[in-house]
Amino acid sequence: MALKWIGTRTQERGVFNPAGLSREQGSVSVGSDLLARGSLMLEVSVRPQMHPVNLLRFGALDPWPSGLTVCLEPDGTVRLMMRQGTRHLATALKTTLGSDVQTAHITYIWDAPKRRGRLSVYIPDHGRLWQTEVISPFPLSTRDAQRIITDTDGCMIDPKVAFVAIADAPCPLGPIPGLCGSAAVDTRDGPKTLRDIVPGDFVITQGGRSVRVLWSGSTTVPALGRFAPMILRRPYMSLWDDLVTSRDQRVCLAGSEVEYLFGEERVSTAVRHLEVRNCAGPARPTPHVMTYHQILLETHEIMVVNGALVESFDGSAVLNAPAMTKWSVLADIAPELRPQRVGLAAPVLQGYEALTLTGATIG
Image 1 (cartoon, rainbow, N blue to C red):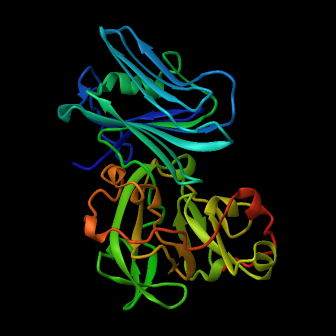
Image 2 (cartoon, rainbow, N blue to C red):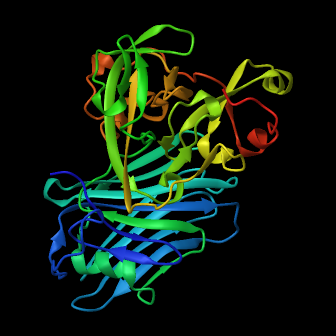
Image 3 (cartoon, rainbow, N blue to C red):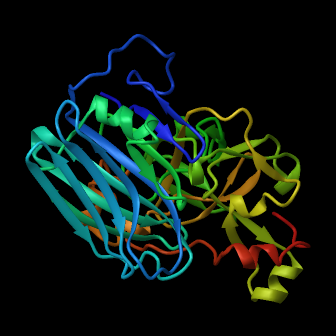
């Protein structure tokens, strides 16, 4: 059964639909039945702090005592604490979150029938990923899931939290694809939509080389925070059609200013850093969820997508730690198909660096 996101909450509003956020609101009852498998994800933006912060704190007494707290401590430790009746669960994960101004995805996934779960923290800007096992994880009841999303009195979220989301199955941990499935990638046989590319196909890269596809996949995520869709507008960046991406998808910048400032022929940056230009902006209207696609190549490359130069999937956060691969979008890739060399296709600019390139050609 495919994963469905059933609730999202921001600082402004909460939306809950046990049938799935992409479906019409139905008459599905909400009760004490358990979500035997699921995901709870928070996107947070943090900075160094002196005191522990409860990023999310939920508690209820009816029909039995229950609670869930996600706490960030000054040393970067993330703590998950849960209560169901007389039972308590506590898991701690050591990270460097909060050592700098950082955005992270904190995710708790559980599969109660298999008695296994995972607590994960991923910092997309730096590809840093931490995980720990949650032994005999507690599932959420559908009623508690709804309360976390819609009850602002019973569930507090810190101002640092961009969104909270709940799904009815474990979601992938770590890096996430960032291109729409209708995007066309240059291949040996001409442009081919991303959703139709399969392992074994050959993609034409920036330098005209043919590189084999090792993995092609997709995942559905809440259309919020870093996952909110953006549109790169034609004819900028040599686009022959608009391109929908996530805010973290990286594209390439080139030109004399790039060479002068950074000593590189070409650099890459996240699409969200281009929002100050005319070439990029938020997609409107924004759906509740987005399904993003990507492809993993034999080497990390710059490929041509709708005419623009776009990075292929960067799976280094999990490919460098095979024990984490099985929890990621690359879980189904055969070990012998993992790339032998993992590295960046071009130097990556952070936001303040990208903003200095106001006169650069986007190419």
